[in-house]
Image (cartoon, rainbow, N blue to C red; front, side):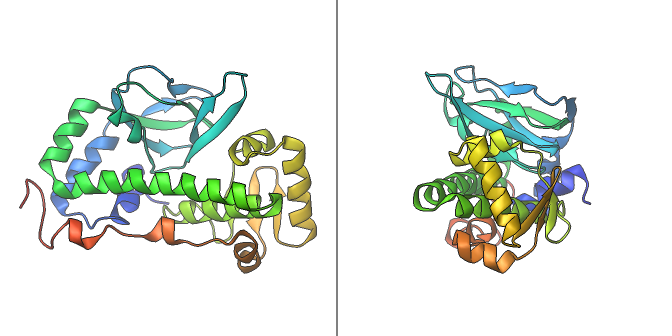
Length: 253
């Protein structure tokens, strides 16, 4: 498995090829990780958005709480993800983020983020690309929820998680750790926990996946992809080359 810094660098490198100087600047985002227990809130809605976060270890999510008290999970974060980037464009947070497992998180003041983006055009665009692709993940998930049945929804989620974890060497082939409870899967996909349970049983009965405690084994990836109409494009797409001419580097070089 990669180092903590390697997780983040590998995710960023999917969008933009980094120079040695860029990599050194990026390493600052993970310079001082702190241990964060499961259930800890990283930020709260309507509180000032003054830090950028990187998830070095563990899992987290952001969610919205409706007026009736119901909750919808918006973002699911895995090791190497940058968290809170979209919210930095607002004065206050638009969601609440919580750790799903015990992990390690680095917090970076907004002033330092601004300085980093001024220092390197590549990192500036890489961070923007990261935010855009996180938004694309949410959009793809929403399309899946609105257009497909329960089997397709869960198949799509499992393939999404597998591909995201494979980018940082956190999935072993077609098997991976998934710390989400059935209730939380339902909050992410607009389903009841009972419906999630029945659908997982159905997928197992059809020989498509197995779930043992919190381990997932995808038994037929091709069949799951057909059912979910799944494509890897949102996870693999690089930055539009027209945005960053060849040779552009730190300080606009």
